[in-house]
Structure formats: structure tokens, C-alpha cells
Image (cartoon, rainbow, N blue to C red; front, side):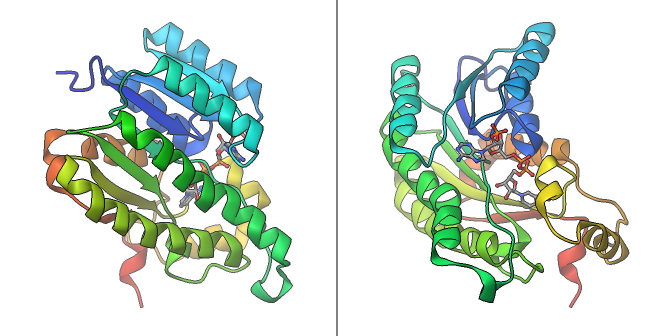
Length: 250
Ligand SMILES: NC(=O)c1ccc[n+]([C@@H]2O[C@H](COP(=O)([O-])OP(=O)(O)OC[C@H]3O[C@@H](n4cnc5c(N)ncnc54)[C@H](OP(=O)(O)O)[C@@H]3O)[C@@H](O)[C@H]2O)c1
């Protein structure tokens, strides 16, 4: 049974990495998916082609969500295309990787622009198209609550996002909109190419992960999909960790 048939989903960062897997998973369950991205047309074309081959309904929309004009253009396209939005997933993220004491105001502000302010702006501007049965899901990171070396900027944005989502969850539950977070452990995506000492991080993660496996994008997508089911309507304001048990360890 395709429970998302005739439903509309918007996935930011929906053409690459974890967001790509989420776009495909939601579309596989019948949703009309709008996959947002910033720059890479190649990834957008690839997911559109894959969707066409598999008979799925995925449209991509390009635009830097931190840039006012391009944000407004993306919003305009979504407002025109979507009469109603059932699922909004925030997977887009970026950021500067430096030690905390090396971060300039500009770098920190830039990281907050995409990982925090764009999330809030888009949620606020689209929530009017959502209603009973709606789902808002944010993808956060273990760095929102704990230290990952050189992750001070992104980690701070994720911590702030988690606090913001608790308020969303509280405020929107009475409208029938369930708001939650999904927190994967380390996932091999292109994002890791920008993280210094990624080899060490990978080795350490595997060493301290009880399952001895990294999380993969499809597993994150499966949790997001579960949150869109009827059972998900009673899960409110939670942060679901999917990390092979790594966060169990002191
Ligand atoms: N990978 C991990 O280990 C891991 C672990 C925990 C949590 N997470 C979280 O999971 C989410 C997805 O991570 P990922 O590794 O899949 O990321 P990724 O491969 O780097 O993909 C990031 C996506 O965000 C889009 N994006 C970046 N800047 C943007 C902007 N200014 N405006 C609009 N879109 C923008 C990118 O578009 P373009 O492709 O066009 O640049 C891309 O589609 C993120 O929120 C991340 O923090 C990741």
C-alpha cells in the first residue's frame, strides 16, 4: 500500500547524499516529490532520470536557499506548483569546518544561514500549505549535542536547529503536524570530503560502533518514511538516532 499516493513532499538537499535517498524513498511510496538543491545540475539530472526510469514522480528545483533572490524564486515555484504540502524534509546543509577558536563571524554566520535560518524561513513560509497529517522532519547530526573535531560551526547550527524543532513540534502538534528530527551517525556522502581528518573519523567511528557498520542513506530514508506513516502522527518532537549504537558509549 503506497500511503503517500497523491501527497506532496518537499525535500531540501534532495538531489544528493541522504536527501537523495529520502526523495527516492518518499517517491517510491507514491509521493510527488520536489527535490531542492543549490548548484549541481548533474545530480539533479541523475535523480530525475532515475525517477523516470522507475516511474517515480520527482521534480528538482535549483536555488541557493541563503540567497534572497534565489530563495524567493524557489519559494515562488513551490507555491505555484503545490496546492498542499504533506511532508517537508530539511536535509540541505553546508558549513565551514574549523576549530571553534579559528572561526570568524562571517564563517559562522554563513553556516547558520543555510543550516538554521534557511530551515526556519522555508518552514515558516510553507507551513500555511500544510495541515492535519503533515510532517516536518529535520536531519540533524551527533555534532548538535557532542564534539566532533573541526565541527564547531555545523555542530552549533544543528544544536540550534534541534532547539527550534522542539518549539515547532510543540506549536504545530495541535494542527495535526508532527515535527521530528532524525540523527544519523557518520554516513559516507560527498559532504565528508570537506571534513579534515576524515580517515581518522571513519576509523574511530567504526571502532566505537557496536554494529561495526556505518549508517547508509537508505536507512535514514527508511526512518523518515516511517515518520510519514499513521504511526508517526503520535511521535512528536523526538530526535531519532540511527548510528549503530555509537551514542551508547560514554
Ligand atoms: N553525511 C553524514 O555523515 C551526516 C551525518 C549526520 C547528519 N548529516 C546531515 O544529513 C544532511 C544531509 O547530509 P549529506 O551528507 O547527504 O549532505 P551532502 O551530500 O553534502 O548534500 C547536501 C545537499 O544540500 C544542498 N545544499 C547545500 N547548500 C545549499 C544551499 N545554500 N541552498 C540550497 N541547497 C543547499 C546541496 O545541493 P548541491 O548538491 O547542489 O550542492 C546538496 O543537495 C545534512 O543536514 C547533514 O548535516 C549528515
